[in-house]
Image (cartoon, rainbow, N blue to C red):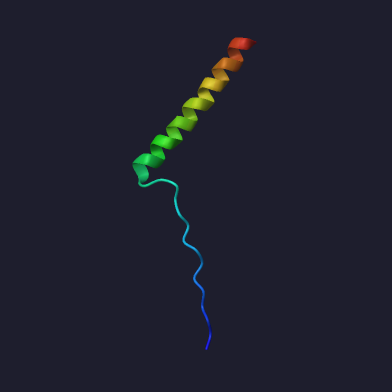
Length: 42
């Protein structure tokens, strides 16, 4: 009667929460490094 389509599954880019946390800390570290570099230039 009705064709019910399921939405595609959202694929989290990390295998587990440990990988996700590590990726977050890498981004935080890069942000801190950029801020410190900007302060050194002024």
